[in-house]
Image 1 (cartoon, one colour):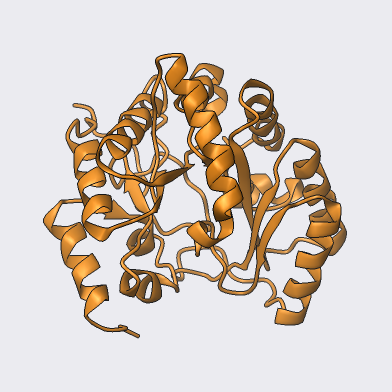
Image 2 (spheres, one colour):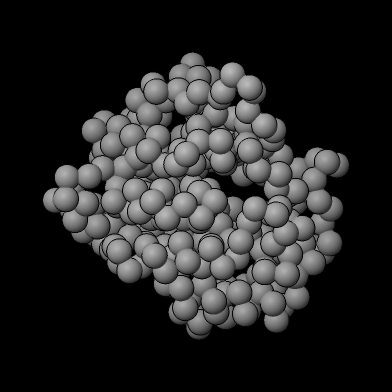
Length: 299
């Protein structure tokens, strides 16, 4: 339900600046709450995704023959929105752009640079997997966002049926390993949806793989079918089970865990990073700026 005028302010601002949010396009159940708190997860690189993930309601399709250009002014408008909302932690995600040579990594980096010029905020990025493009991942690492969030979404057995043929579990783990090696100051975060048919044993094995790859921040939430066009829910996980899984994840080595039915990738992202994350992330940012490079992000 709408929660006061602040929610309307956020929605109007996003509309006035011609921006997209994953809150709207993914039909997030927390949208009204977050908008009322004057926060949103910005979605860059357009609103047409080139992937066919079967859990997601973001519009999908092939770019037109004449091309699907990237809006060069979008980074500035994202930064302006973050400034006017007074965000102290900005989360930026994107649609997959497999039609672009770098998957949109450079546009992400320009967004990060614009944010850092206009805002005193930490940045969390939630990019695609860049189809195995190591140069694109390296470009993102050079920008040194405080948090690099890449969703695993589900267990390996369900990867193809949930995320499509282009998704690769091994590459998802390699993204985290690569970031850990090249800039350990960047905090690594991932999220999984429950209720798609995974077993508890599969889930625990996946969490162990992620910890081994260097990931230390985790979100676990209930998959909810956005519309009849997406995958049906196989099982509704009880809140008590979410709590138990959260405790187990901490014992495995995750330092920050948000586990509950309505938890989503960037839900309460600022609270999750905490002050310790801010200090660690700023160290990574200084490293990147010392090398003369900048990059991307928003929440």
